Amino acid sequence: MPERADAYDVVIVGLGPTGATLANLLGAAGRSVLVIEKEAGIFPLPRAIHFDGEVLRIFQAAGLREQVLAISRPGTQGMHFVNGASETMLIRGGSAAAGPHGCANNYYFHQPRLEAVLREGLARFPRVHVQLRHALTAVAQDAEAATVTYRSLESGQDHVARARYVVGCDGARSPVRQAIGSTMVDLGLRQPWLVFDVLLEQAVDLPPYTVQYCDPRRPMTYCNVVGERRRWEIMVLPDDDREALVQPDNLWRLVAPWVRPAQARLERAAIYTFQSVVADGWRDKRLFLAGDACHQTPPFLGQGMCAGIRDASNLAWKLDAVLAGRACDTLLETYESERKPHVRALIDLAVRLGNIIQTTDPALAAERDAKFAAGQPEVFELPPQLLGAGAFDPSTPDLAGRPFPQPQLDDGRLLDERLGRRSAVIGSRQVLDAAAPATASRWRHSEAVVIDAPDASLRDWLRSHDAAAVILRPDRYIVGVARSGADLDRISQYLPVAP
Image 1 (cartoon, rainbow, N blue to C red):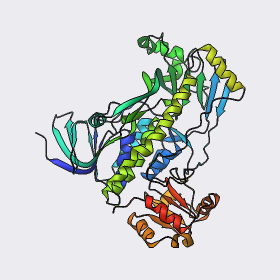
Image 2: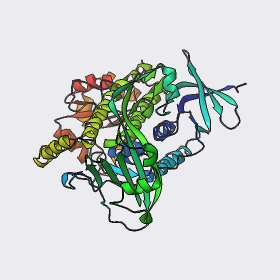
Image 3: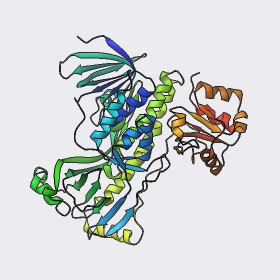
């Protein structure tokens, strides 16, 4: 028989990067959290290898910035696109300089080490409980809470937990998604690729940058990951014998132009189907989906894990606000509406980029190469970090619903170190005093940080956007900008507070 039901604010199913990030953010907010994970430990082989500056900023919000920086490297070298004649068609540069999020724009890492940092971070929070080697067996919900039944994979003992909310960060085969009944919409790409990871054991003359080998005979990607780790992603062609392809002799033959068996140790070789899908329905009352449970993207943009981390950031502050009584449950309705459009845009771009890289028709490849040579390549810029409709002022789409930069303040701190994970109202004392008393009361009830004497970097931002004040959410997205007290009154209505 199951034990008595323990009570939590949130149950998270899955302790991959998305689930671990969500647990850290909720733990930092003081929430009681149960995390259920089937595996006994961290999957030891490399998978994701890239995250961007916004994701590092989210790790910073979880109090893990320095720990993550210690196990990653900035993407200083960029990416080269090379055709079948070994001609460089396009170079996309990289940089270690601080970008808008107060750090480099791109980083490379080894996923097991990142997961170790995230799991070690959970030890800081006595109200976060992790149950390894346990599997979800049932989930139900009523008007008051959700009931989760989970089983020890070692003893077979069933346990029961009650929680206000349950979040499925449980991967592509998500049991929570099955409980919700969400369907996955195919966005048009299903292509097998061989992923080949090695550890260099002697010096090898390999590019320090990423290379997209757009060779119609065999499209391929090379990545300088971190330390001595290198990766090749090799497109599987229709006539390939997949079982033969992963045999050591054939594997090394594929990468023979770059590295030999005597120079490196094979860590992993596996065939994966790169696919593009997104769930229809990320929420059913008290049940939510995040990460691969609700979207999967081809890796051509390096945004698969990043998308899940952004889900965690968006959902964490909203769950905390509702659980704390600072906001109504209706705030949670904005999670999918805000996140899904950006995820769709990323997947659509990854599919387009994949179609260009994966070209195997010689005539189409020649046409593509000619466009590059003529200076007319297809643009691969990431879509703007723009939320769909939700908890921000829609009347200023050029600013609202986008991340606010993280400058270094006059005292040497980064902005988020001053703000923490709270909303913020930033402007001159003159314009803040022009807001109505009810507006100031709303700021207090939402526990917003009010900065009435912005330092130089914040004043410069306001001046450059012809703004007198700006309101930020806890996830550092802009609620809106104001040029008068009346503007502040209107925009502040988008700060969620309970009635």
